[in-house]
Length: 403
Image 1 (cartoon, one colour):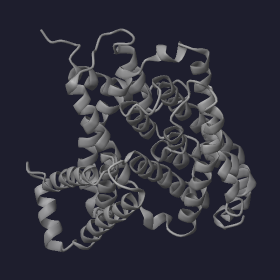
Image 2 (cartoon, rainbow, N blue to C red):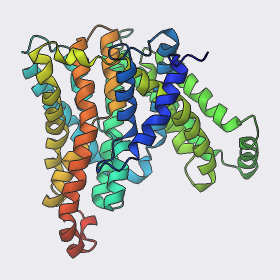
Image 3 (cartoon, one colour):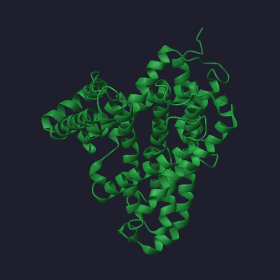
Image 4 (cartoon, rainbow, N blue to C red):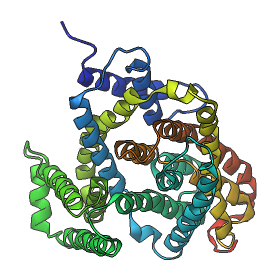
């Protein structure tokens, strides 16, 4: 008799159910990743108890995490955001980190709130993947608003990963860590350069042919690169997630263009269809909603973190006053405040495993991140829609700096 409690069957059942539920016409489209986490929590040991966690799920969750960050890296195209947008995004993230240090310092007065550095990194993330469909539906992806946000989201994904790796690396001194990080990035850039240049017709023809065979050589080569960078990153004293993300950036640079679209579709099918659900559903299975009710302090932390995401990532929007007209600053602030749930989960899991973060604080951060991708995309769409008449009357003026 087939056991419905087996982790593989449970994860795949939720992976199919979540996107079907996301299509229900309920007025607001709930992101699939939120449904995966919620459904995992419902059937997990802290709720209905239908599915238990174990070593297999632990391993697959780690694999899914690396695969997810690899795909996030492939989405970053620095050619489209180079120059002013990237500079603004970097300055904005540093300003966000400074604001986060201040507010977390204040929160540290609460007895149950610890691990300032980890909380700061969690509050400075931005979810690029969730917001792209919202901005595309609003028709602003190709505008100055869209270009600046793409840069903001890219840095909001990359900087916290680098920060986690540096903060938790204890094998070397600070200068050695910095030197090794530069060396690691040099290796990534070298691999990306070689991949971008190695586009000879005969090579592309061979890779395309193997992509249609059982060998799937380009996909296997990409997964080998993920494994190599993951191991190299950990060997040099950094978190493996940095290696996975870097491998994604290298593959992304090497596979731009329509001639690589089939390959990217194959890669997405493997990663999003099989591996990534283990990460999000596994997170739900471990999520203890009861932890949020154990104390008044913890219950208050969830809405507090939700508002702090808006403060930390939204306040630096004021730095963009010469690039964004007043009517676009509020929707930009809302869009920037959508937390990267995957990264927040990564940061909290690392914080708990290294005993540098209180479990209740970790649960509150994850809950706030989940709420942020329900609340802030809706507010972004609503505020952009309110500004559309003004945008239409200005024609293409929104693309002009300082408009």
